[in-house]
Image (tube, rainbow, N blue to C red; front, side, top):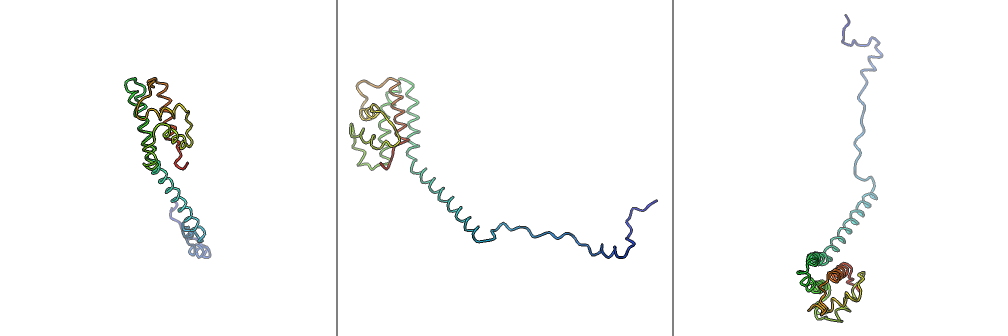
Length: 176
């Protein structure tokens, strides 16, 4: 019967060599810090660029808050256009929404007193990317305080007026 225990090597040279063996030496872990100042400067520039982009985004979002609120109110008014009973009221409130949107951006004394053709000219001047037809500008000028004599109670005219209002709110240019 053989023994399962290992016997020491009989060769003295082999025994001395085995006693001198050591575990594998592992290198120290690699540092995550940059080795040169250039990488630190690049990281700082990237952090500054990200901070600038975030600041611009927040500034843009804050400056356009009035647009989001106006568009939300416009959506609520548009829901009433489908019903004949609420259409006249929604159309009556639409020009005041446009006027309040303009008052949120431009000085009160430059906007509040405008009516009729002057109001229409103002909307046309500051339309920016919004492309509206003359009939829509005329609608906003005439219905600010009353519905026109023809009474745009038809759904098609109401939809065009609301589409024009949406385009003006989304696309007007503050810097024209």
